[in-house]
Length: 138
Image (cartoon, rainbow, N blue to C red; front, top):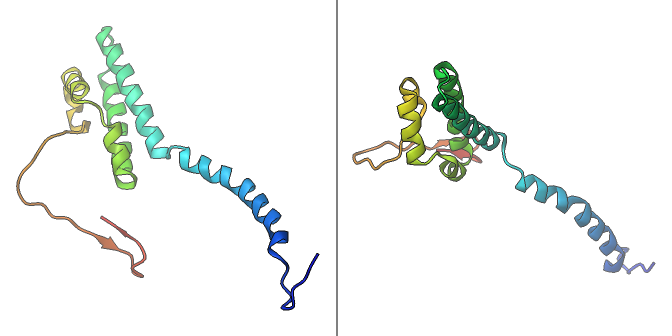
C-alpha cells in the first residue's frame, strides 16, 4: 500500500470499498422506490373489493351495507393517497363508467365515490409551511 506525503491513501484502495457499498446499498434503494406505498396498495385493494361487491350485487345478493363499508374505506384511502401522491391517486381513480355503475347499484354510497368534471369559479389554495420553512404541504 502506498501512502502519499500528506498521509492519505491512494484512490485505488478506496475504490473496492466504494464498489462494495454501491453493490450493497443500491438494490435496496431501487426496491424501496419500486414498492408501492401502503395507501396505494390500499386503494388498489379497495378498488378490487368494490368490483367484487358489485359483482355480488349483480348476482342478486344483498350487499348494500358491505358496499357502503368498502366504498367508505376506499374513499379514506384515496384521500390519503391524494395527499401523498396525487398523480397515483388520479391513475387509481375509477373510470367514469364504473363510477356510474357503482352509483346506480349503491345509491346510499354515492357520497363515497369521486367525481370527475370541470368547475368554474374561484377557489382558495393554501400552502402550509413548517416552522423552520424546510417542508410544506398544499
